[in-house]
Length: 398
Ligand code: NAP
Ligand code: MG
Image 1 (cartoon, rainbow, N blue to C red):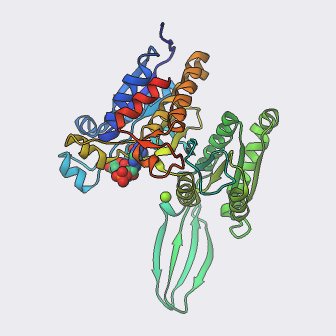
Image 2 (cartoon, rainbow, N blue to C red; image 1 turned 60 degrees about the vertical axis):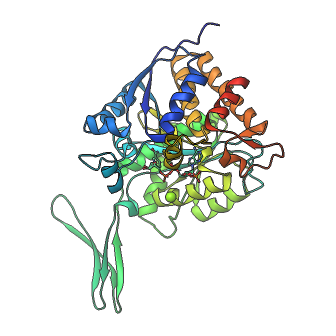
Image 3 (cartoon, helix red, strand yellow; image 1 turned 45 degrees about the vertical axis):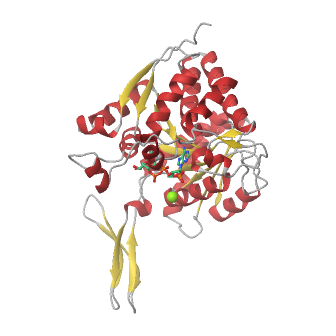
């Protein structure tokens, strides 16, 4: 059998712990036998980030911008304990934060649906994708306590030194106050990423905020989305047969619960933080959640939504059996291969990625799954298998 050829390499970003083990096995068993895989390899594993003083992460992000499509393994975000464990010279920033800063994108999280793994909301038949704006609002806010008798004012000083002031509150008792901001250019790139993603997926886009209460702040989000949609995307949406609308977030919440799924829900930063956890939990587990960062310039970075599964890694190191779910990592690869095939005009590459997804879903449908899935599956013939046996079962079906 001749292998499927690639034109442009993927940016391959290796990672840490159990997901690094899964990464290697998955490539060997499911991709390399069929695809003449071309990648530009960057080792984002913590030891190599330390060796390169994290330059490797910056290089990988730039390569992702240059080549367009990247696939990333989960990586450790160092904390004090990791600094000790890995003898780090510095508490390096989260690679995801570095990638986001350079690619300047929006993160889309989408559940992977499989037979027997049923969402808690019975009407949900298709995935619900959360598009979370990842800049500003309460994540970059300033907060103060305001003691009784104090006045809090909002003051904006323009470039000429002119002040605009507004009274927030005159406190007759002790209280609290917070100031936050966002940027037009960040909201604009959020909007572009959402419209592009909806066109790609062929799914409706819903955006909700609280503009009835927040008449300047949230209203600005609504207006920027509306302007960009009218100017650049409306015609393409109509041609694709999909719609975009804005409504109050309260209304969106009610619509989401009643819906069949199959929509993209654009959320402001805080809403996206909270609602993505709700949607992920309602669909089953983080092990069944795919994630892609879409930059406004059209670069894509695919990854799993979960971490490096540390607890399983220590079992693996002790030689004990593990049952780590590879589905989200597999979807990072298939997402990247499909997108590469689409951009390069190599449909056999995209078709292979779809067949690989089918094989994985059929494996779960046949009752063969990892422990996390077996614990929640409704299938009567389900049985939990080990990390490697699950990959082998997918390979057999592929
Ligand atoms: P985690 O790696 O997602 O694991 C948390 C728990 O969820 C696991 O112990 C396991 O439960 C379950 N789980 C997650 N993924 C699974 C899978 N594929 N198969 C089976 N079970 C799975 O989160 P964490 O333990 O909080 O973080 C570990 C490391 O990952 C940290 O160093 C963190 O910085 C990093 N992290 C990286 C990313 C990223 O790169 N995008 C994201 C999050 C966290 P049981 O142990 O009960 O089986
Ligand atoms: Mg959260």
